[in-house]
Length: 229
Ligand SMILES: C[S@@+](CC[C@H](N)C(=O)[O-])C[C@H]1O[C@@H](n2cnc3c(N)ncnc32)[C@H](O)[C@@H]1O
Image 1: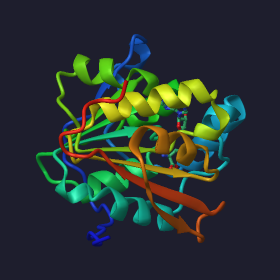
Image 2: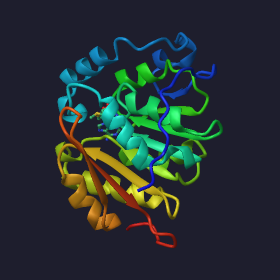
Image 3: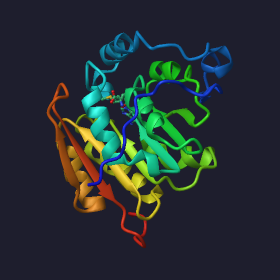
């Protein structure tokens, strides 16, 4: 797999990310500009304590994992990326650092506390949507976004009911641009079993320096392939 450059973010543009929530407290107008996120790890850990099955990790992804996911994602080539489960945004920051200035990133996060953290970010390319990956089609439509080139996911397939995992993977396959890629980083291999049914064979890498060690799967939707039923 060709490697892409990975840049550490040094600055962000100045327009706030759009944040979409029914909860008026989460309006972007109430948020201060981006500041260094020293408390991300604490917010992540608190999120885990409140919703352990959904968050499924006590710490966010390491830089090692972020780098490997960026290479698998080829974010620098994409016009539209969807991220499922951005958490407090380590992977999101890495995606934005690699992305083109005119590309878009739709981040779909189920946890309102993490949505609030991400809503403070200052990048016009980022749209933060509170919701479930299950609703990826509707969320893309709501934002009048077309087919993504890449969907990247950190959501824990191993702790959700298999039918829900299958539905999410089918929906991801449906929405992807033909030739587009689905990248998932996971501790366990449930996503691999389910993903094979929907996408076929995956390319698999491992990042052993992450705690815990993580598998990175990349599938491609074949050009001309119809959406999964
Ligand atoms: C293991 S954390 C990954 C966080 C971050 N991307 C990272 O690498 O550090 C999983 C994230 O997926 C979110 N999540 C779980 N189920 C989800 C779903 N159905 N839709 C959207 N987000 C979900 C959790 O709230 C959590 O933020």
